[in-house]
Image 1: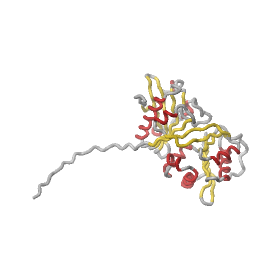
Image 2: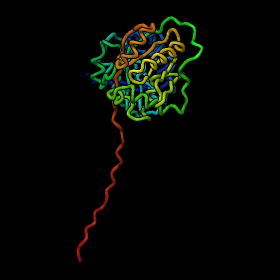
Image 3: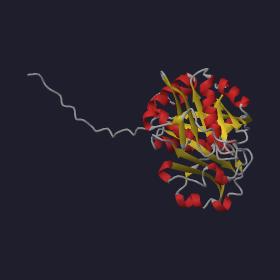
Length: 306
């Protein structure tokens, strides 16, 4: 890769991007806003249009003269130890050097802000996969996207109840049972790290299904996506979770199931959910940046034996 380097944009510099948005028309990651899931999704759907406050977000720009060659937006997840790339746009259809420069500079900036993990999602078979890999991102999971069936009347009584704050530890235990260790190693080994996973899910409504020995299912429904965790090989729990998601997910929303959720995927397709595509989840672990304290000269005194 070349020597080009991206820089952090201030709030004023980020606002100055608007007149140049038509030039940055290639989105290289899988966006997560409504129906805009293609590589050429609208810029407002990628995260810049709803940019969080600057301490919780970083905007990196790679300039080429007076114009931008590429722009990246990342947001800090709950807990502060993990960040997610929500948009990476280029002026060209393919520019591996720009992607590498943006991701490398972002990794340094996130590490300086005490971040330890950087997440990114991209469409399966993306032409930019090599650039992601050379930038240190490791693909550790695949997600299947499914569209909900035609909406019908909401059931009079749902099996799942709204989740409460006291359920958080039980939801983490269910996560450890439902998700393979290889995936958890990248996402959440501890309950503290699980806060970032829930923020990744971006669910504004959460539901749980109680069992005799803990929770049997958890469903998180957001404005655009829904996620489901169920006890292994529990068809009734999966059916209850899918029924809840179907009742609360907007018609334009998407159900997201991991590649390890073959059981839930089969039941979902039987319930009328249709496949939309597959995206790849990547992560990069970042080193902790600790500044070295300045060494002080200590005088050495020799003692002469009496």
